Length: 184
Length: 192
Image (cartoon, rainbow over all chains, first blue to last red; front, side):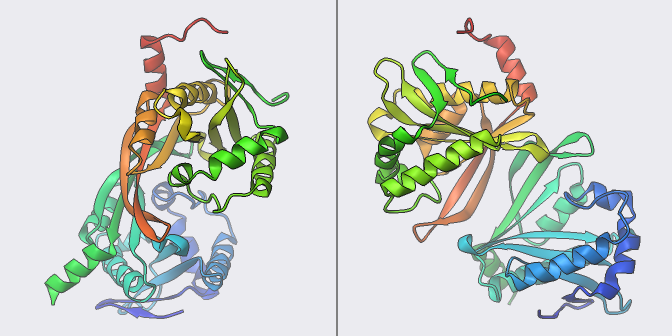
């Protein structure tokens, strides 16, 4: 699995040694509340299991999950991943950042890099992302990385006794290339 | 649920598929006009494919995962197509889909069937939401969704590859609240 680099970040393979930190961050109810599949309270052993699952899913070509590591901190502060549907040349972007590191633009910086990787190295044609509309901060990341709004699925997800609306954003290869041409 | 459900509309009987339907299923699903609107239907679509398809439809219904109803014309017993609802139990929602013999397009049969299975999904499966996806180019399918009360929710650009081409997808949805409001406005005809 490649290591991706940005100005402030390294995106690298998750290791079992990341599990204790992952456990700490995911003990936060707000992160679980804003993601589809993270349980709350976060059970012991779940981080190890999830990291092993991420490795399997990489080996089978189904997804890339990266630990987000700021160079000046030297340890993981969150996760960003790309789930793949290669038969349709598309990927789904997902991410979370540990609460102490919110509002530093880390998710945006990591997402930009992963999108470039998806288009340039994996040859994807489309990358989309889904967010609960009650969490507009996640949508701002999607906007900043050049994604466009595609719609809102009403009550699409059931989480903790509530039906939640899901907003959709996506970026196509052609959008990405146009943007890249602009910057050079 | 005891046995497999059968539903009734003014012109149609919606009943589980049976093995003897395989000739009709093979004929309709191998029609290029029908295939053009669907994903994952092999070309060519043989009688063996049809048998397997019917077997899967019956298994899915028995297990309560997906409910594919055949659309049978009451007046002459002809099989016109299929309308199905897939239960996505984790989120208490149903995904609907349908196909129809092109000889019967444009007469409202699919809308009639889709409305009935949607009502059935809200009533019997106690769904919170029903949704459907169609190719953006498939205007007839979008119209069926609108006729059945679904409204447009999302437009996904180049979301799938079909026959080597990127295709746009539309998603339509109907929540339980919307369905109930619609019902209050247009109460169902006397139950049959």
